[in-house]
Amino acid sequence: MKYLLILSSLLLFISCSKDETAVNPQGTPTAKRTVVVYMAGENNLSDYARADIAEMIKGAKDLSEESDLVVFADHAEQNKKPYILRIKNKEQAVDTLYKYTEDICTADAAKFREVLSRIVTLCPNQEYALVLWGHASGWIFERDSVPTASFAPRHAYGMDTGDNTKKSTGLWLNIPSMRQALESLGIQWKYIFCDCCCMQSVEVAYELRNVTKYLIASPAEITGDGAPYNTITNDFFAIGDEEIYTGICDHYYAQTDPVGGHLPISVINTSYLPALAKATKAILPAVSNYVKTPNAMEQLIYYLKYGNDKVMYDMNDIIHAALSDQPEQYDAWRTAFNQTVIYSKMSNKWHSLGVGFSDYTITADRFGGISMFVPLAAYAGRGIPYFNETIKKLSWYYAVGAESVGW
Image (tube, rainbow, N blue to C red; front, side):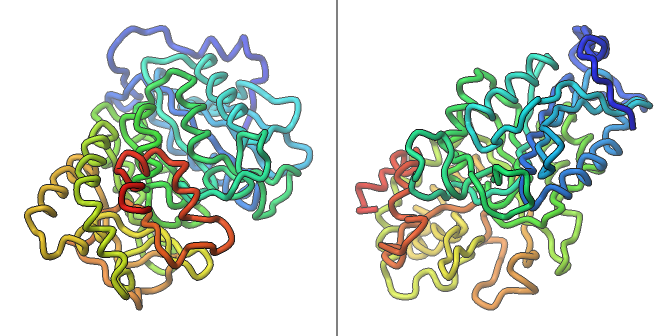
């Protein structure tokens, strides 16, 4: 593999065509789209990053000239600085667009913005999409122990060790800071695909509603090797919206994990999130009353355990249970939910929770494919990450009037 180091030379490969679509070597239409992969790999996922780039090169062999797959990568290597690659369907498949001269913190919102802005400048196109690669735990983050920084000490997205080692601890970019960075770019991303754990929560989606048309992610933990880029790369550049998100979800779901399970994954149409918030606000008092009843949460679907605490419960399962004696109210809410969560793939097991489930059963009527946080008395005063307090940093909390029910 050869790397082209001179920026002026690589600009020759950028097409100036004005056509609505382009055609790959096999004659299949593809979109004129720049897909940016932000690989936060300065941690214990570093080896997976290199493997996934190799998969992308295989997957990109059928892309058209107007389809730009651009990867920013930061590895856990002492002598390897972050860099930006452009992957094409050429004999020389990879061009180095830019090499950073010093290490950067991928969890810093300002650096996150700078990287994306640089890529958009280097690879202009008719539309853009974003892939978030790395560690994540959805909206969760601790109290900010570094008041002047734009990143949180732990949890949310993109953990960076800060010392180029393969550790599992470091600094994280919290979701409100990510949202602010993305808004400042002034780009409406076609979609944001999260190849990281637990990002399909209604809190994350609502925070990002104004910067992307679709959010494609899993509410659960994913395996270390993540998405099968050799099969989903073409889906990144499909023409039709439905082709994009069904292709990504179906190909991701098709691969099995170490326990023979499949990753639950779903798609949110962000334009309907305000309506979902309004519908949720209307039934929130019933939800609040339900979760206070003894053992109410014990049988519900959840996607994450933080220590001994079950945290990310399935949104539909919570509402379904809370409104079990109010079917008309549930149906009205479910209408708004179905307009928002437009595609999902259900699994009965996946790697992080082992083979099968002992404490709940997944069924089609209960499964929603996205999570929602519910403040519980059991979380109160329970050390870090102070769930009941930090949820108040998310816009969803106020959109559904959570304070009005004592949350």
